[in-house]
Every structure is written in C-alpha cells, then in structure tokens.
Image 1 (cartoon, rainbow over the protein chains, first blue to last red):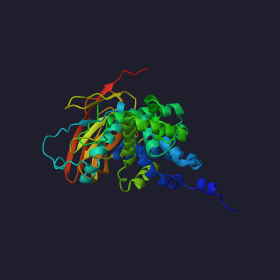
Image 2: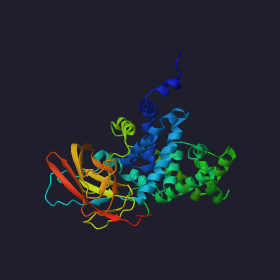
Image 3: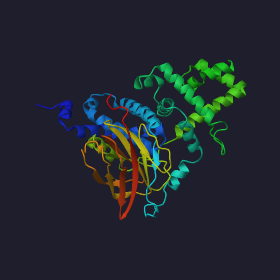
Image 4: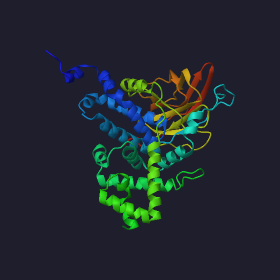
Length: 194
Length: 208
C-alpha cells in the first residue's frame, strides 16, 4: 500500500515539516519584515518571533494552499503588535556599578561598517526616516502594495481589512511621504520635516 | 479636467488603475498645468525611491539559527534573542525594559513587579564585538524567582554574544518584599562586568 504525501507528512516529526515549509519562506519574511521596520535587527527579531509562534501550528501550515500571503498576514500582525508593545515597553540603559577600567569597556564602539554607513547615508537614510514617520498600518500598506506588488484587492483578503480602509491608508501614507520628502527629489541638504 | 480631479485620481494613476480615456484626460491636463505636472513627477519620484530601497543581506546563518530556535524554544526558559545594532551608546550595556517601567534617574535602574504576578524583564547587553562563550550569572534577591527555576537564587549560563544588542528575557515573579538588588554579571576571557537592577514590589494587586 502506498503512502500519500499528506499521510507521509503527518507521520514525520513536526520539526522536519516545519523546516521544509518555512525554510524557503524565511528570506521573503525577512525582506518584508525589513520593509516594515527598516532595521536588520528588528526584521530578524520579527521573523524569529513569527517562526516561534508558527512552530506549534505546523499541522495547520501543512493544510495552507498559498502559504506566502498567509505568512505575510501573520508577519503583519506581529509587526503591528510589536510596535505597540515597544511603545509601552521602553528599553533603557542600566549603568554599571563598577568604576574601574575594564577591558570590556575598551572594546571599540561599533556601529555600522563603512559600507553600511555609506548605504544608509543620503537619500536612502532620508527615505528610511520618512518611512519611520508612518504609522505601522500605513507603512505596511506601502511595503506590501507599493514595493512588494500586492494589489489592494489582494491585501483586502491578506490583511482582512476593507478595501476603502486600505485605499485611505495608502493615500495618506503617500501624501505623508511626499510631504516628508519634498521636491526636488531628495537633493543634498533636504530636510525631513518633523 | 480640473486640478482637483487630477489630485483625486493621482493614486489610481500611480497604480495603473485608470482606463485609456481617463489617462488621456490626465495627460492633457498635465500638458497644460505645471503645478499638477510637478506634483505628478514628485509622486512618481517618491514612489520609485521607496521601491528602490533594498534590505541588507540576511545575516549569515540566520535561517538555520532561526528555524532551529523556533523548534527548540521552551517557554519558561530565559531566551537569548540577539539584536544587532541596537541604538545604545556604550560599548557594553545592560538595559532593562518592562511593561510598567519607571526609572529615569541616571544612576538607579528600577523595575516594579506585582506580587505573585509573573512578568518578563528584558535585559539588553550591547557588545562591541562578538563574544564566544561569555558567562552570564544571575543572583536573585530574596523573594524573587525566575519562573521555572523554583527557589534557585544563583543561576548561570554560557552563551555567545553577537555584536550589537543581545536581549535576554527573564520571566520573574516576586513573592514578597525584597531588600537586595538583582545582580547580573557578564564575564568573558578574564574580564567581567556587573549590573544591578533594583526591584520594587507593588503589592496593590494582592488580595484581588
């Protein structure tokens, strides 16, 4: 008697199924998460949180026909939740209780490397700053519609949000970006307004 | 066509959602209206600029690590979640965040916990470079428990720190008044740093 694909999957350890299903999607999730957050660290965290949340739902994932839009929805909700949670949960610096010099203190302060610095400079930096000024829902619709190419009708289903609301979010987001990135496009010295 | 009509249709125009007649009407308007023409050019330029943004390459090994972590994670255990590039100033920093956080004095960091209510305290270590096999030790004050570790007062883990921020989530529960601080020590290759966190007990919710 032959085993069907779904029987075979059900019999396998969840971790194997989970990896098979999600491995091809992680890079996509990261890209989308970066478009939501504009930060590698935040995007990686967001993807990690989504994966942790999804592992217990591996059986459910096996039944999903079009996984990518479904994952985009999970990522979107995780992103919106994380922005709200972060607003309630500030990270602050703790001071050490030692005044003596420590080799750990002498470690060079690292920020971005030269390549990353250059990349984040100029126009790229200004656009990222402008995107940061959008609320998470607006930023997500820009990322998913304007960049990733989902139509608003697709997003209506993916995000389970009425079309009119999406249109309005997109309109306001684009309007805000234009206000934040004034003419003539992004010349040196152009300032992102508060 | 009036300028107002053009503005109303701009989003549809950008999305290619207009029919040939509507596009022709807009085209004719743009030829005669410099303001709307500039507005259109600006809108197209901003859209293109946003589309051109591309994410930096994914951190090497991230996919393997993230999948593996997702399948191994255990809820009650403290969890390391490396965060690159957190905007903290010092070369090695411990930060604390909590839903109900109050501590703005530069020299004293305090969190408030409610008796018998587990809450997650997040400790952020910002490392200037990757540290292999760093040891993190926690000394918990009296009446403070790490969820899942019972009454253990001293705990330590060996872990690799990535460059940038490394976030550790500690599910804590406070059982009564506490006098001492929670002490976290990070040591690596003969050097160590110690951080203190004062825990204030809020017993307002008790007996509810």
